[in-house]
Each structure stands twice: as C-alpha cells, then as structure tokens.
Length: 259
Picture (cartoon, helix red, strand yellow):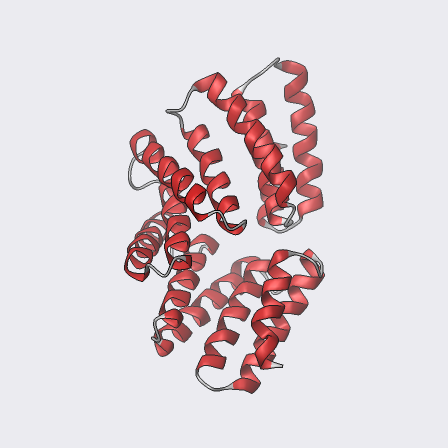
C-alpha cells in the first residue's frame, strides 16, 4: 500500500496517493506506538502535500516526521537525510535560502556516508543544491551540482528516466540563464521527449518541460512558439494542479510577456 501511494504520487494522482498513505499511516499507528516507519509515512504524505502546493501542511508533516525519525534511529540514517532533503527543497520554494542550504547540505553529507556517493538519494540532494545555487546566481556551483546529479541518475536509471530528464531540464535552465540558448533548447527538447514518453502528455513534469522550451523560444525571439508552448504548459498545470498552485502561478508569470 505504501509503494502504491508512491506510484500514485509519481503519476501525479495526488488524491489517490493520499488515500493510500493515510491508510498506511492508520495501520502503522495501530501496530507501533512510535516508529521510523510512521515517520517515513508522514514524510511521504508531506511530499504529496508539497506536490499539491500545500506548503503549510507539508511543513507540519515533515517536521513531525523528522522528530519521530530522529528519536527512533538518530541523525545518522538515510531516513533522517531524506526528510531533511525534503525540508530543504520546501525551504527553497518558500524563499528561505539559508535554511535550504543548511538542510540540503546536511542531507547530502549523511547520504554520502550512509549509502555511498553513487546513490539516487545523493543525486536528488545534488540536484536540489544545484537549484539552490541557481536561485542565488552561483552558476558555476549550480552547474557542478546539476551535472553530478545528472551523471548519477543516468548511470542508475538510464537516459529516459523522468529524474534524468529533470536534471537535463535544470541544466537547460542554467544554460538559458547564462545565454547558451542553442544548448538550452536542445536539453529542453530532450527533457520534453523523455517526459512525454514516460509520464504522458498531461503530467506536471511534461508541463514544466513545455514551459522551459517556451522560455527558450522567447529568448531566441520566436514569440509565437513561446506563447504556444507556455499556453500548453499552463493548461496542463490548471487541469492537474489547479489555477492557484505555485507552479501554475509561476507559469502564468513567465508567460506574462509572451501573450
């Protein structure tokens, strides 16, 4: 049931994911008084809330998860690092870059020592640190982190995996920021191809790739193509996440100059 909840989240079926995970939580709470398993279920529930843009509820679940997991297994554990990483990306999205830096760096440190440097959790931490450095215009550090994440993901998951495509998309955004527009467009197109193939036409990750191509098209001066890509992205976001989701609002803001 826990794994089914994870699958629903990956497929952007968030209501179904919550239904599964809440059943898991009820079962585990009946069996255990307190446990890292309960903490991880709350972590997964928080992750679904994050995907839904429900950041206040995300924070409640993740902080409760972290306290429970630390009490059960301590700081030096992959579970602890996983929750810290999720708290770090939440902090970044909420504008607290200092907190994000502390939590993501701590998560990366634990993961590297507990599961090794070539693990997918390490790649996730590096990817998120790359996004943090990109938000701070530290482009050299952002590139190092994002490229390292992409290399690990490609070795583990292969070139077509959605996580690998996400890393490509993020590197493409870095290229867009630094004016390497042709390279940015190539990476955005490849990310879109992977997301369409693995996740389908209506997934938020597909929308993000469409938005990225729209932004690159705008930078290249092709305003008609930019408007088309961005409109398609916004339509997917609205259908899947609603008009008030942070991703929808960000897409509309990005499209503001290309209507």
